[in-house]
Image (tube, rainbow, N blue to C red):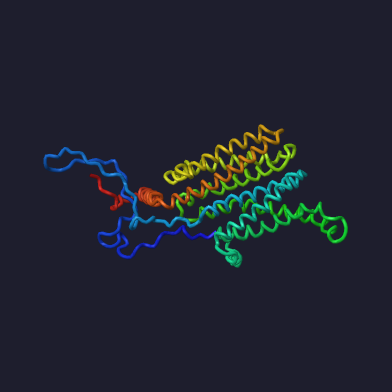
Length: 373
């Protein structure tokens, strides 16, 4: 994913504090205040005045931050990457506990999801060569660079593991017979390798979003990886509930409970801990998506636990968990975009941090603050 679209806009030519005389609006915000005063002199000496509510503006009405240029395909990439990670973990669980239906469903879904992730990523980059160019450098301090390498390690391993499932249809003699015998152990190793890289694949996108200047993403840096990890586990569990008989779906049910707990905890934190920056996650389209995600997650887990013997209820629960994961990823994505477009979410937290720092250092009030009337 390209990181452009998260930096500040260049200031227009002219005076940086307000543009040319009589042209630009103030950068920032006039503070909201409930202070009142009395008009001095004249017959209206007792008339009460109220300071108007704050109006948040920026240079010539432009946003302070340039909103991300990412579109829906990046939100979809967030979902498919988590689905691939969760499915590979499910497949490894089925492999280690000798549940072949879980293993097959997880491996096939992991390959399909990581293939879709690659398509979405290349759509964002513009042309496939850019993905190749990103592999020229490994930069541990860059979530984007590390994500490219994680995806490159996970994809081939998931592919080999999925191809190994076709060993049973090959003839028993000749070169194909040799491949029939070699594929299962190779697929076993590849499946474990994919599962080993799955936690990084599931969480690096949360780190990537938090590494931008988008206010509601940046401030949620402790929670986003938790939400994405939980969402990945829940979506992987959904694959098991959909693709395996109830007798083999025990690990999927446990994954659903663990994933739902992480996802609901993280989503609650971003909606309550961030103060003003939690607002974009509660209002408008992001708020509706995240509320739908919570309801679907709760319904999916309830169905997974109560419908242990019913294939229909298990499939319904898996569908609900998949839909919940989609809603959560898109809700987080659109919440960050909304916070970048409104200058209030940039100005007010900055002002609050400055005020808190001045108070802790016992400094006099900022002379730029509006005087008491």
